[in-house]
Length: 155
Ligand SMILES: [Zn+2]
Image (cartoon, rainbow, N blue to C red; front, side, top):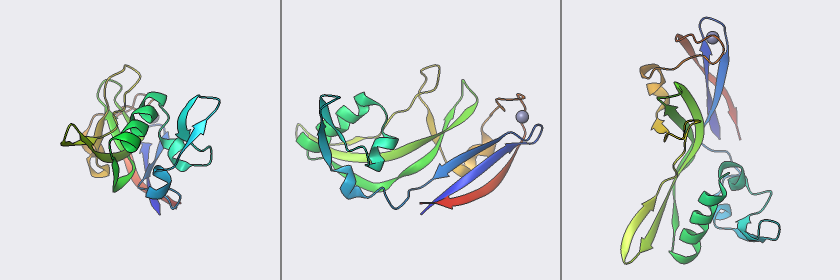
């Protein structure tokens, strides 16, 4: 079961909800299940597959498919929703973290997804405990003081 994290602006009350961890539907088995998508003309996750909701980039999906299908890729069971920080936007993003180990030219490699902000700058992964250590700005009032709270669990 996943947990969540709420961050609210001390000035205007605007709040952000972030999901952490994973729900029951994100089984590693379903990660390995690609289907041929006639519309997209590529191997893709089934519409009901939860992984399709977290891997939104077609380019990334294609990369993952190649790793899983031809490079003996393995999903490491340390995955889930996490927090990412953008220094240029002063914003926290909620993105899905995972690691794939695979073999290429006899070498063990690791694939970790990269995510980007509106300015095409790469997001930095941070822990929930580190949110108070980075500079963020309220999108509504530009305030910089926030209160943290624990949100509801989800699955
Ligand atoms: Zn605010």
